[in-house]
Length: 386
View 1: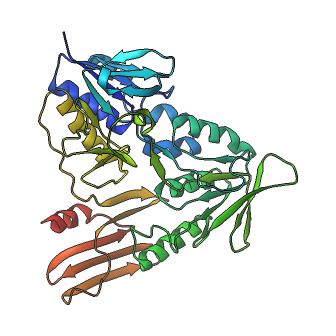
View 2: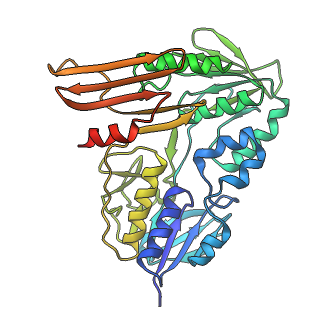
View 3: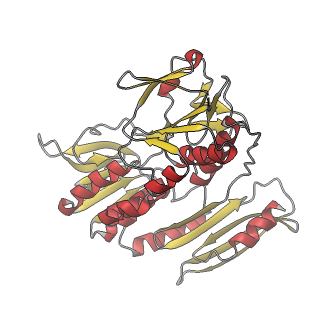
């Protein structure tokens, strides 16, 4: 009888795991369980749906024929409530139990909603699924002012999409500048000016305290900061990070430290159970990046199917296209005061919104930051890793 590989989750890691398992073992029975109603899609492109609802069909990972050709069974609207490691089973929400020989946990993450007063008001939302995107988009025709809480990549993309729908949009970022970890102060200032030229207001060092409504109305009307500033809004999108979905294993001895703990073969501490993606931490490192989730899923799938793959996970660069511009950065972006050989090369063009910074220790490249023109990215990344 063919071995049965069960995969919980159908995003980047889950689908990469199914593909890796099939390549390793042409005979295995591979079943992917997804609690979502939609076929797997590019989560990184959800904001396309806010700008254009017709984009929903364009962001699918694969056509239905892709799964059929590879004999990968994809079950949608199928929620796993609990894993039963001793029995090699999972229990579904309808109480059905499914057996497995190998199990891959690719449950991913969910949006984090901070404990804000008023977070239950109508018009307060998070964006993490295609269903979220459709629900938010359906409200947009009646929205005049929007506030996006959080200036990370998803928050930036959401604000850009809302602005393109002619909605007066404000980004409120808790940190003292946008992309605090990815850009140095000068690059962030230049990027912020670019965002503001698009008509989007940027508020940094913004500590959101309360989401307010008018009188006894159930809908959100404004965001109040701790310093008293108030920003009117018909729609408030909260984009303040994610949390791993580990609930399926809460009653098991599976090792969890906010995420499922896995080794470089994506094995957990329990036999025949692997983990990959946003729900997994490997070698004490977690990045929350699509490419890393795919790599982890591929390794988990190969090994669940009998292979011996090992994850190679160098620190990834930050490379994005957002707000109509491009950003690439990696390595050290400033001096820590400990390297007497530290030096940097900086150039910028404020009119074109371009910034280039290279840092060195002696003659060795130790970091780079590119804004606007990222054509040197590949060359610099190779040089950095040399």
